[in-house]
Image 1: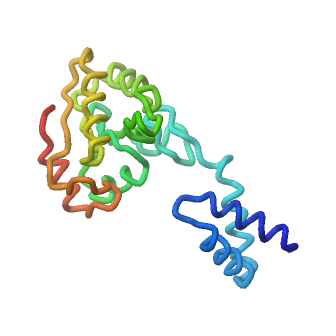
Image 2: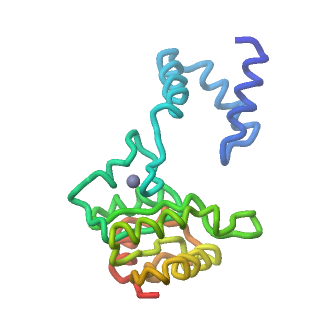
Image 3: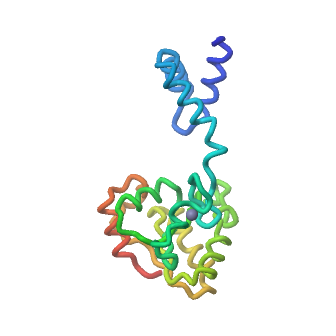
Length: 197
Ligand SMILES: [Zn+2]
């Protein structure tokens, strides 16, 4: 490995969220000391990501199949949709184990200051799914923050013409906290105690 390669990998890793230049350099030197089989396995797994993982055309989940395993599971209730901001939030709801409906992943929250507008949240697909699957309820499980509440209102407005019931997870998830880091029992209670919007 030339020092050019070390610099290149450092620069690539420092583009990851939460990884500064110094952490990236530490990771690179850790990899240089690590077991070579591990390093090759890590590299091959990262390299395969674009060819192995697909975005589900129905819900926006990322999985090795399209539709994803959740949308393809006939035992799940296709008339109940839980809307989440990101895929780790979907995993957090799944960890509870009691939600048996389907999901819609927004991949963001409405945030005009950050350049995220209504068209960036895949709501046309949500509207289409609600109509096509005769969905009876959409539960909005975005985080309790200004952006999360604005997104919930936008979803309610977007779906108003479909007649579907739109509900919001109950307070209990602390304001400003991330769904992903909310413990499973709190999240289960917030889902069970959801309120009609
Ligand atoms: Zn899916």
